[in-house]
Image (cartoon, rainbow, N blue to C red; front, side):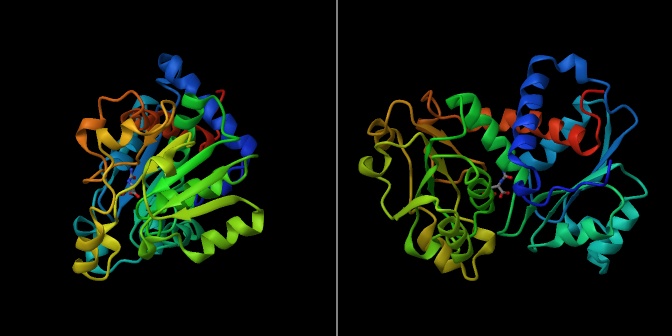
Length: 308
Ligand code: NCD
């Protein structure tokens, strides 16, 4: 099979995405059948930016498949701190591993790596741009909860400007029929113009609102909350002013539809109060679990080992 990378969720067609989600569901059901499929294979995790879930779920995924992991969790413990380029690092890592997940604060860095790599590169988040594996996680969670990925009204709330998970989720869901987005953000954190322009071009229905109230939530199928992306702000005062703009608490959720699920890529800061966690509509920890299965499915897909 030709070398394949995953930079954006659009690198997988709708059919391939659905197949990958089916595989993830099958893995959840039949864990033991996949326990040795990657025996002898190695995953490198190159994380130039902090992470808990994404890095550990990639590593757990590879271990669940019988493979091994190597890598670094931050740039200051690798030769990056000596000035090595991403292009050189990936040439080196290609000699040690069969597949690589890379997170980087600069938009496009994993793409640069993919151009020099002889192994599949997975974009595990590049700056405020894309986060395709979080999107696969979100899609699996939505499909399992709602039974479909079409004809859904999705509220996206918080930092829509810098939130890469939102950009990737919109790109992927926009390929399905009957998707409507309600974009809930302060004026300063609205979606970047290139994302809304793309939605208009495709004829995707969306509205932009500031308030997260009963009126906004009244016919949502999913409310996708996000954290204000502190690390992407130019000055701290702006962050402090914005950070608690939205707080979804129990009282607010009581005014929302009974079948409106709440998702969040995590980590949360204050935007979802802990008293919401007990509500059956709160599904962000289910997302975490699903993240392992989709990454297992993705590793097999890119290594061309599915069905082996
Ligand atoms: C997200 C990210 O890194 O973009 N986290 C994650 O991978 N689950 C969301 C965030 O950091 O806010």
